[in-house]
Amino acid sequence: MNGKISCFASFALAALLSVSAFSACGDSGSGRAPETTASSSDVAAETTMSEEEMRYSGLPEGDFEGASFMILQYEEIAPSSGTVCVDELTGEPINDAAYERTQAVAEKLNVSIGFLNTSMEDTSRIVKQTVSAGEDTYQAVFQGSTRVPSDMLSQGYILDQNTLPGIDFSREWWNANAIDSVRLNERTYMSFGDINYYLLDFMSVLMFSKPVVEDYGLSDIYSVVDSGAWTIDAFLDMCVAAAHDLNGDGALGKKDDLIGYAGYVSQADLAFSHAADAELFSRGDDGAVKYDGVSEKYFNVMKKYSDVIGKKEYALHNDTWRDRFRAGTLLFCGLSVGELSMMRDLEFDYGIAPFPKYDESQERYIAYVTDQMQPLAVPVTVSDTELCGAVIENMAAESCRRIRDKYFSVLIDSKYVRDEESVKNLRMLYDGDIRFEIARIYNWAKVGDAIWGAIGGKADKFISNMEKLQPTLEAAMEKTMEAVSQ
Image 1 (tube, rainbow, N blue to C red):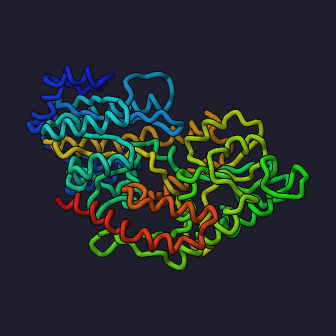
Image 2: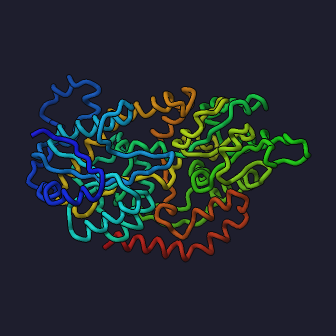
Image 3: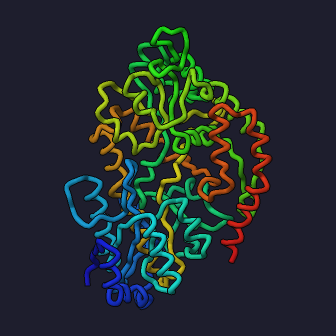
């Protein structure tokens, strides 16, 4: 029996099929346990393997006798969007690669992979209904990153993915840094990587106007980035240098004046601290998350930004950046990669750079991912963990093999970006250190509000604001840890 892909277009249809199609999920324990391809006794054969074969060796294998594997996925409709599974070939490169990926895994493991696309609210509701009833209906769930903790984790609905046989988060198709940034103790309740390939869509970057750089004699930004000198000071110096009184009224920062930076606070401003490798939280030897308070470095980051882009003469912190950029009165804007799709019709050229490092001694550039991203979660009702682990690991690996390069090619082909230097920077960030703001993901005391308030001009009040928040923050953290210790 060959593996196949099935798609359920609505929850109603899924419910009608639950007696037959989903019963296979509950009985899937009768499938053959997966085996790995690693063979310590066949060294000679290994030496003849191609580089491609070696790269994807050791993946779980097995015949699961047509068992069902169902995916529930929240379908984001914002510019930054994506779904893990699709139901047909359309000729669009990423769509078709995703379809072929799923088909290849279904055939390899002899499983039937089905999925349901639905809303954020329905995703949470369906998980609550099925898990509360003890039903093994869905084996993988993709939901908004802030809704997973509030609607699933806090209720005990999802399991630690480290317990799934066959999953290896050290392999290249998983983004270990993104996973580590939100794990609790040593437990992984949310995972990210090529399986949710639109991770890049939600990564924050700086978009810059090439005409402004040229007209005002600013340094070549790509060269500064490549040299490792793209720091907070370098960025802020450019923001100040770019600011010009275009309307001739003798003042800076008016609607028709040129300013240095604009970005929407919750999607971009949180990127500044992470890019500078400044954190409010750390982990103990046991992996437990702890609040460290505001370090000298962290305050310096807030203060540097507050003193420049916290002033209206140089920056704005709202959602009007598109209009400013289109009008040619903005040097930098902070945005997620997916939002570049709304800028394809620009008549002038632009480039993409990372958010700046703290200083030149910082080894690498770091990218922040907004909380709209959809992680992979696994319901606790999964009965056949071998099947679950085998399908997830193979889908992640096949996503790396079939989708990743096409994704970057589409960025150019669809005019999201217009030069190879931009693609190079995006690849560097995607393959490097990607982080979430953990307090934002777990909704700990609205720490995000305090951070972007400081960057937006209130740095002098940041330490006192965080001291006031600390009791509420630590209580929220404790509540989260109690939920996962049950």
